Image (tube, rainbow, N blue to C red; front, side, top):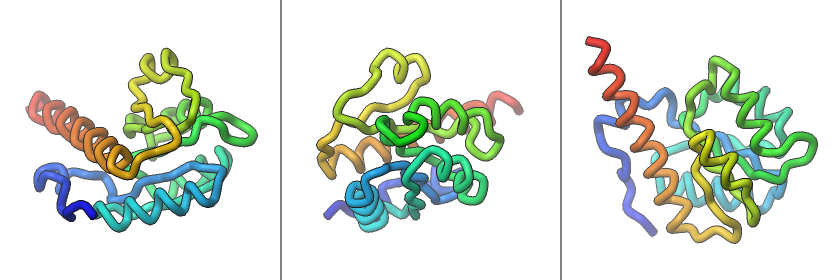
Length: 147
């Protein structure tokens, strides 16, 4: 079990919301991610099972991080990501793409973090922490530059 409080205090104050949106069509994996994130971090999670649900839920949840399965029914994780980037509620929000096989070049082009399945709990938590800390550093430096 990792220690709580893995978010730097400055980042905790500037996060848009403490919610992570998990888009995963396998309910067991979705529940696994929800459980480890809520036990090992100060974040809350919302789990949805396809892209359509993700687009609807994102409006209400206003997540600080997206965790997207690549292989989803209907539209794949990249398509979901692109739609979410076009919405005010999720524009610019960092994302982690999860799958056994990932479209590496497309993910790099968009700046999406990559997590290969099967996933190691430690790697999941480290990736979340890194993605959010990097995002907050960028936002803080943009805020300081605008003064």
